[in-house]
Length: 67
Image (cartoon, rainbow, N blue to C red; front, side, top):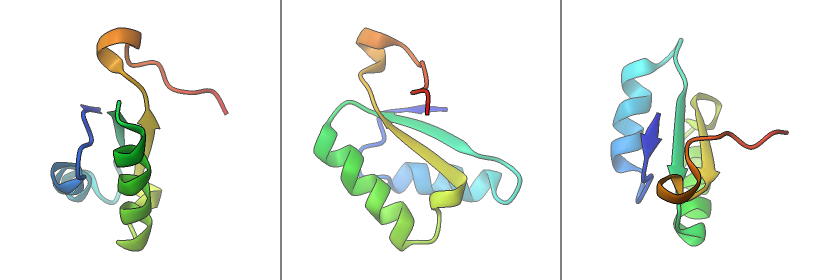
């Protein structure tokens, strides 16, 4: 679990360290950065190993969105 996806570069290292059996849950409070990171994970073939959630964990905690 990660708070602050940002550019996704650290997230990518986390994903690679848990691949292929693990999964990263990362949270980003900046909507545009969140969408950009999601797109980059798709482009880099990592989207199956990561869940990116738009959420301010300092304010709202680490709850995952229900699907």
